Image (cartoon, rainbow, N blue to C red; front, side, top):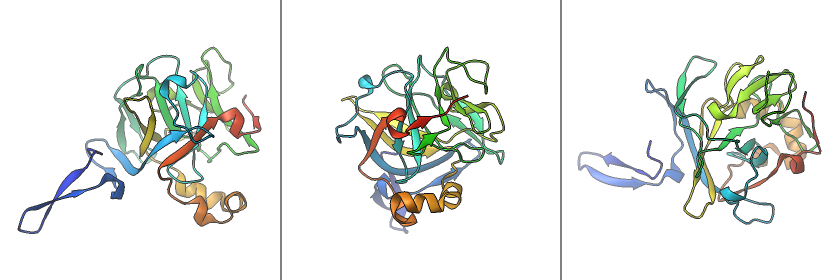
Length: 242
C-alpha cells in the first residue's frame, strides 16, 4: 500500500474520496508475501523533545522508543554497514513477507519490536535481558556479534536481515518497524511489518503495565505525533547479556 494515501470509489457515481493514511488501520496477509499494519506516523525525538537526526545516532548503539502503543518497546539501531535488501521472512504460522531493508543515507538504520518472539522478554526500566551485541562482541547465543540477543533463552536475531532468527527457540523474526528519514534527517515511524506480539504482551504483563502506566488502557494507547527515544542504557538500569 502507498502510505501517502489512496483513493476509494464510492457507489455508482465513481466519486473519488481521498482517505488519510492516519485514519487507516490495515493488516494484510496476501499471496504477495505481505504482513503489514499501518499506525500513526510519528517523529522520533530525544528526551528533551527535539527531533532526532539520523546523522547523530551512534552506530551499533541500541536505542529504545515506544511504538505503536505507549508501552510496547522497540529497538532503533544503526548497524555497522548497510543492511541486506528484500529479505524473505516467514511468520510462525507459515505466512511469508518481505523486509525491504534499512533506511537513511547509508541504508543502515533499522527498528524492531524489542519484545522477544519466544516468551516476550523485553526491556523494562529495571533491567533488560534483550539487547544488541556489537560486531566483534561475544555472546553464548550465537557464534559472533552484530546480533540482537535475548539472554532469557538464547535466541539471536539478525538486524541486517529483517531480524530473522539465527539461533535459539524463537519461532519467528522480531516485528519490524517501518521507518522513514526525511530531507532534514529526521526519523519517522509509521507502520509494523511482520507478526507482532503486542496483544500477547498486554495479556502476559498486565499487572506490571498497570503499575507502570496506572491502568492498562493507558498502556494500550496509540502513540501519536512523537515518540521519545533514548539509549537502552538510559532506559534500563541493568543490561543482562550472556
